[in-house]
Length: 357
Ligand code: KG4
Ligand code: ZN
Image (cartoon, rainbow, N blue to C red):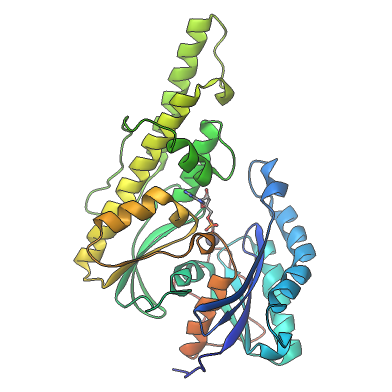
């Protein structure tokens, strides 16, 4: 255990997917700067992230993003005590750009370096700005575009995986259903906005997977697809046109209704399992993390049904950012972890498996 000074200041980089991000965090919980250059518009026309383009874009954006993050410190580099970067899970080429840049900067400045697991980083968004910090043991629901998992956190760095998705990640399901409904990318915010226009009602199936904390969203996605196909066929019959698969032909009230029913189904299963796990494991609190944690219905329903305090990261810290990487790094340094220059990227790094000190 390292006793770190309260003002221990970390510069962190995050490049695991399509955001080039740099942030400065003091004492593991105070965000000094949080800069994000999103590539969303670049990838939008391809309907998803193109790995090669992501890597090239990270290389172009890294220097300006780091400069902007450091500008918030009165003495720039002289105020930085350590450097961190995400080393997995994520796109290998994208991870390499940020990891190598961070290692080079740390080496050149003679600063300690730590590589951070992206999943752990999402969880540590819950520590940023929180006073008091989340207590242990804690049940955490991590729902992002690439992952959906429920974990018991006994202490810093001690994770027991309770369950995970057997098919699509929750965010991936939002994105795919948004595409089926002809809503934009990313799907989460688009579904949330459309659902808010619906008259409550209409039920879609829930995959409970009884006696398990695992999740499944592909059946729900298929249920939406079948309803959409039926609706398009019906509209084609009425108008005498040939049937098609163009979601632009769907009427807005139907789209809103589907978005609403889909969101309710996802939220119901996520919240029920999380609250149940928290009870069973005697958790002191529940932590919500990952891009889908920005979902308004999920946040309010979890607070409504939880029997213990719920820790929710600020909305802008739910989706990918580097402040959460710095927060995770602080607690890694705190527990005595530090990495050498040989630490590499690991595209499929599981939770709790960042290579040791
Ligand atoms: O954590 P994140 O930024 O990236 C990954 O590490 O995957 O998560 C992105 C995911 C996307 O699938 C996006 O649709 C979803 O988070 N998302 C939301 C909302 N905002 C973002 N899902 C539901 N409701 C939202 N408000
Ligand atoms: Zn993420």
